[in-house]
Amino acid sequence: MFSETKEGTTRILVPALPTKSIFYNPKMELCRDIDIAGVAAFLSSLPSPQAPLTYIDALAGTGVRGIRVANEVGLPVAINDRSKPAYELIKRNIELNEIVERAKAYNEDANVLLLQNNYDLVDIDPFGSPVPFLDAACKSVKKLLLITATDTAPLCGAHSGGLRKYAAKPLNTEYHPEMATRILLGRVTRDLCKYDRAIQPLLSYSRSHFIRIIARVEKGAKKADERMKRLGFIAHCFSCGNRFAFPCSDMLGMNVKKKCEVCGAAKMRIAGPLYVEAIKEKRFCEQVQEELVKRELGKKKEAMKIVATCINELDIPFYFEHHVICKALKVPPPPISSLIDALHLSGFSASRTHFSDTALKTDARIDDILNLNLKSRKM
Ligand SMILES: C[S@@+](CC[C@H](N)C(=O)[O-])C[C@H]1O[C@@H](n2cnc3c(N)ncnc32)[C@H](O)[C@@H]1O
Ligand SMILES: [Zn+2]
Image (cartoon, rainbow, N blue to C red; front, side):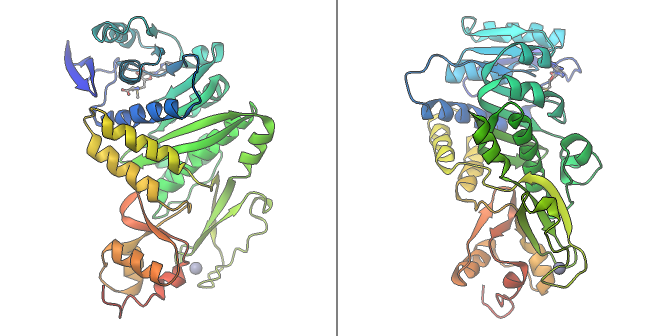
């Protein structure tokens, strides 16, 4: 039994009751709305005229992502799921939206399809970790990668598995959603590099249970080498909250002083390797914002808020939860905006972060923040 729902301007048949064989999560409409604006923004950034690009929704469920891309952006799409009932429903959803001429359903193993064909845009939206599909996706993709991860526990350092799946060590810090996003980006960087392809993150964000990255793919061994230099580590002191990032070239952590320069604690902990440079391109995010404004989208308001915050977010690879700072100072938490103003007045950079409504990014060190004299300052 199916019921009809609508996302954007697309009609979708979904299982009336949850079933194991056909997956549909209405909570991911937000992610799909941002994707539609993201794919449209990416296409408008390309020099025209272009031959029509190809897109694959490799793990499609009902087919909603791919069908929306064909219907709302107009790209020719391949939509695949290895579940037979899902495949049958994808075909019905293609007919329902009258896009048979530009959408084709497949009932294959995603890795087989990706290894057999190159696609310009590759979308990987799995249950849990994308790692089992990353190698084939990176081999197949020519221009744009869209990747979801919902295995946030191992990526954040809350469970084991970070090392096993991502070949990186996470730490369970107050900024773990960002650490998770950067560990995933680091892993994709390395998977692409094997095929002399280079990553350029355009928009990376995390929300509730998922991480989504949208990244341009560029060709060339030289570029790939250059992008590898964007990998690094983060040192974190669990005694005082001091933290800093450093590049892989510092001998994989050997050159880093383990002693905390702020509080003197004997050992800072090291997370990584992870992506330590900018995880978004400002101009691209502005184009996504323009696309969001002009489209009919169910989650437009929430999508606009995330993208607007990303646009203004500093490219520093961690943030500070302001209740942690205020606890150390034994002061009641002031509004984030006053804390940001105080940092600006003292000559530091500071911004909000989309990763948390109650956190800020700054180039100030923890002792600089604590010395802002928040206690006596009238906020
Ligand atoms: C999280 S769901 C996809 C949700 C969908 N993209 C959406 O936005 O609603 C993951 C899907 O991957 C399919 N899947 C899992 N392993 C697969 C494989 N090796 N090849 C193809 N499909 C696979 C599952 O049947 C499931 O439908
Ligand atoms: Zn310390």
